[in-house]
Amino acid sequence: MLANNLVASVGDLYSLTVEQIASLERMGTKSAENLVSAIAESKNQTYDRLLYGLGIRYVGSTNAKILTENFSTIEELSQASFESIEAVYGIGAEIAQSVFEWVRIPANQTLIRQLQLAGLQFSSAKTASKSKTDQAFSGKTFVITGTLPTLKRDEAKKLIEQAGGKITGSISQKPTIYY
Image 1 (cartoon, rainbow, N blue to C red):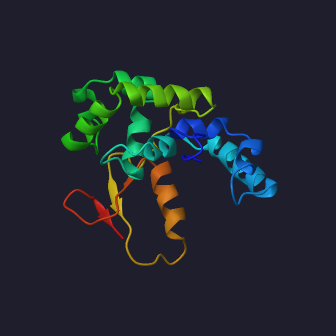
Image 2 (image 1 turned 120 degrees about the vertical axis):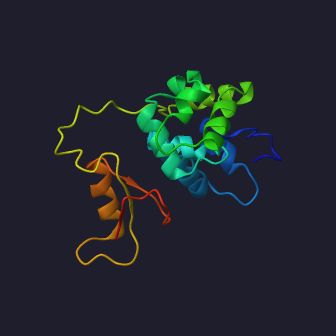
Image 3 (image 1 turned 90 degrees about the vertical axis):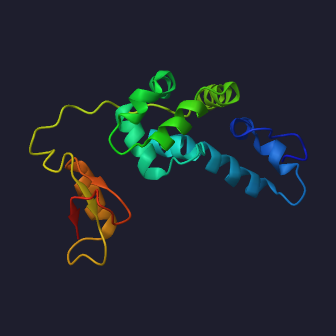
């Protein structure tokens, strides 16, 4: 697709048609339809997954989730100061600097606009204020190691996050609870 000048950036993927793809060497109509369908389905990704997918240096899936919980739109994140990004619990100076610089690069701003025009949602729905019982783990960080007797690891992570806790993948001095 690059050699045929169909795609110059990630945003161009969303304007591809079945006809354009099917005309490529070793690509049939059915494969082209499947590819266009998969590209269209990718528009349904959550804001944190989209932010992670942008490939910002040092921003993994956990950091993307933290950032999107604190900056509900990409515009809000783009306008944030270095200090306000760094002040987010779980985001250090190196990550904050990387994000701060990335969102200010004109080519990246153009890419975000192009992806938004294609229908990708760089915003999160504001959640209703949760009761204190819903936030029992607020401010606590967990590491899950080994096997759990009654839950799968992903189920445990989801429950902890719903209760306001954070999950980290490695043992350090910061986690409050290990299991």
